[in-house]
Image 1: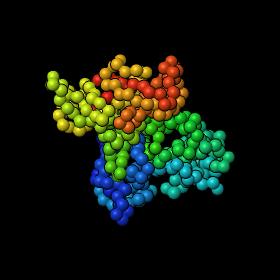
Image 2: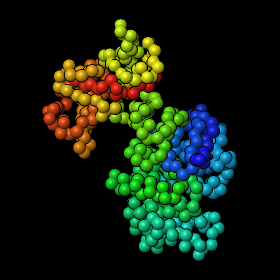
Image 3: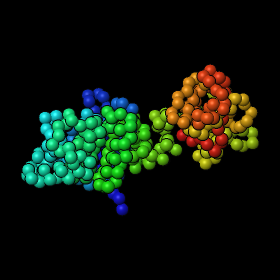
Image 4: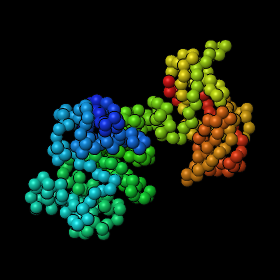
Length: 360
């Protein structure tokens, strides 16, 4: 049975009157890939720095395998960190960079060399050991930084936006390598990122933070399909959010009343909602259809197209309703062409009652 490898209990960090991390509780299982996301300034990097021992907690406990480590120095925590800037030493060779942590730990020269060589081999850099850092590409430097952390054989690896400096193609390639490495080694990865695609493609568990607190933690699928708060739905993007009030109809059915009209949702029955309750209705971009005219479907809203963004074979359309709500619709490019739509055109957006997710 998996157990909490790391537990954060009531963890807090303040700078004067400013609260960076606000009584945060989180359990991290051994051997899992955890991605921490949130807007700039939400406390995700501060939390990582407290784990690493680079910042002191203002309150609460950090437990590693049940042992409180708040007062342990950095080198005793065995939680090395891979940085966005990589922080490699330009005056040392590739191998000497990788040996650095072992040297600090007092490992003898022969063993240092052989262990560094093993890890350089694992990361496809066996032939680069004696080169200078300035002779490497961005992706190769990234691997040296990983090798330098992994050579000490930690049980936890902390990664702070490690791919953000790479170009898009290399970033995608490194995502695959990181995930493969994490699976093979069985090391707990705690990974801070701004990128939705990084978090959702690699992580077993995604944690979304806002203002020093956790808004939601769960599997990527769970968070994508069932955002727990309007903030999470908005942060993930690609959804339309309607502020609604639950109202009864004469036949006893409940409907969702908003400034854009009345909507039917199958989730009203299962959600245990009551008349007068305020809720957010979240409809994903791929669940919304558009037609040139009304009268085809349920949950129809007249809109105007205000923008379009091409993403490969898909088009993200931005619409605005008469009441000013912004709606996002995702279409195949060929459907966009067959509808003959352009910015400024009037259309009707609609979705099925079984689609949409209700946040009380």
